[in-house]
Image (tube, rainbow, N blue to C red):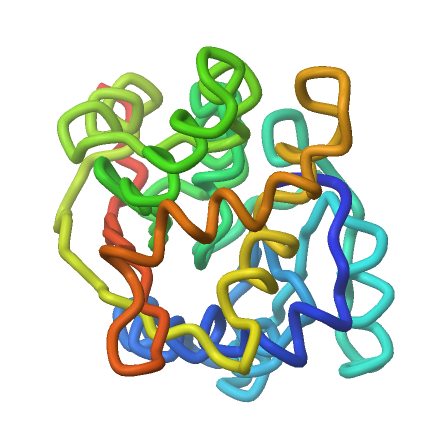
Amino acid sequence: MTSSWDAQRYENSHSYVWKFGASLLELLQPLPGERILDIGCGTGQLTADIANSGAQVIGLDRSEEMLRKARENYPALTYVLADVTTFRFAEPFDAVFSNAALHWVQNAEGAVESIAKSLRTGGRFVAEFGGKGNIASVQAALRAVFGPLADDRSPWFYPSISEYAVLLERHGLEVHQASLFDRPTVLEGANAMDDWLRMFCGNYLRDIAGEDGASRIPELIDHLRSTQFRDGIWTLDYRRIRILAKKRRSL
């Protein structure tokens, strides 16, 4: 998870991020009294939905800006500023939940280790995040505009199911369900692609190639227009991994 976010822009123009997470809550099936950790909780909408089930939920994020907004939105809930690759809690959780966050964590091994250690035996890990091939159009545009520096500055981790399953199994998490699927996503607003690039490529665009990378946004948009713009609407080629895994008992 990147540590620098525009929380207001996120809420105003990118509500689809947590709205898509509603179906992931059906897979989580939170129960009253359960201890649940929401990793990459953002501005808190799904954390609040989990709390409404009667579960005891903690929202975790690395962004102070996001957590400030989450506390403003849902002041009765508990939020923790922490890095997903190193966090630790004294008491184990019945479940760890994460929506649209783990593709920002390039140290996936550290994240999975932290998640596994935080779960009780039999506890479940339910997550959805960008999978192999996610936003291939954007990545191609970035390479076309910035050349070799594009991959060097990429903040994303988009694994295949097999890559991620190996990590989970190595840390004692047994995969019960796993799927990789396309989710074409319509962007909102008159300047939708410009807004998306500024929101989600902010760290990537800053000071790249010794210049203000944001000045190259019009070039990126030109590259994307031929494939992602139809009938006045921008659509991005999202691909998602959805995972349900459980912490197995030691042999």
